[in-house]
Amino acid sequence: MRKAGPLAVALVGALIMGGIAVRVLSEVDWDPTIFVAFGEEAAPTTEYAMERLGEDIFLRPSQGHDGKFFFVQSNDPWILDPDENALVLDRPLYRSQRMLYPVLAGGAGLFGPEAITWAMLIVNILAMGAGTWVVARIAMEMGGSPWWGLAFALNLGFISEVNIGGAGVVAAAAAYGAVLAAMRGRKTAAVVLLAIAVLSREAMLLAAAGTALWLWFNQERRFAVWTAVVPVGVVASWAAYLRLRIAEGNVVSQVQEIGIPFQGFIEAFSSWVEEPINLAAGVAIMMLFVLYVRRVVISRHLVGVAFVGFVLLGVLFTEQVWGSYFDITRAVAPIITSFVLMVFIASKTSERTGVRV
Image 1 (spheres, rainbow, N blue to C red):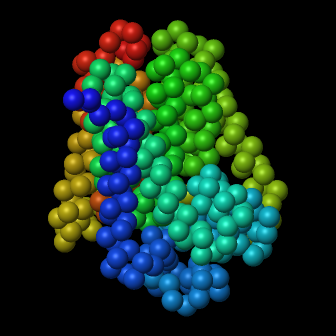
Image 2 (cartoon, one colour):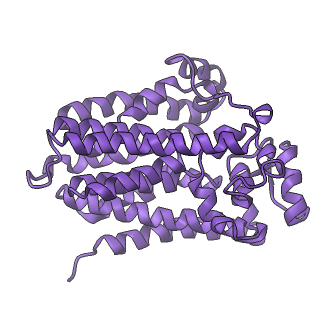
């Protein structure tokens, strides 16, 4: 019998997410706005959506979630009319820095509001399939079964990203694609994919730095420099463009998610007392950080080194991120998938792939 290849695994990954989406949609009369995550108390984005979609949209409790901002961005992905669109965002510069997902979901500015609500979901399901395919190929390069690609599709953090219309799945799929390209010596592809990743989620600069570090210590120093410099240049260029499009007086540019090391984790305990699921998840993620670093030191594997920076980011997160399992698993999702790959198949890596220092 012919063994399943990465395409078959990718199809399973996409079908898993698609099946979850169908089940959710069937319970809300097939209203795709449930995945956009508008909030009952988020007046600016809710009013913005009702003007374009009508009053019959699905509203989540309280403030909703990230998807509502990506909906706004998708209606004007190139920031051509910031007074009409970007000003609805709570932090225009911060939100607008993540531009690629809105460009895709907005059809580069061609889609209307109703099409965007569906496109946001479809793009994420396709990205889930793409990420699963990439991780399956990485697993094969490491000497394992392509079915380990499901470590991407079954990652709770990535599933949660789709649930709230976030950009994390697109960013992670591109970042893992860059890791695969680097493993196979495809330098241009690796650099381009990292540029795509950081334009989807700026935190993927950590993946670029980790990949560059691994390449540097593997004597690929020119490649390492390009891997580090190009993503930074791309992010800086888009940031400069944003500052030209969004008037200075209208900019709210605070970062609320980063603080003093471990403070967010410690403060979150008070909110975990009555939420055992959040308590279990928070403690498990902190333990994962320790085990992840240990595994990276032991294996020195590219798939681990590339994302080790998310451990540092994790200890800096504020209570806003650590407060619920939903948010913390989304924030550090790449290390969950990478840890699975390192633990279960890193030892099978061949010298040919060059994934050990």
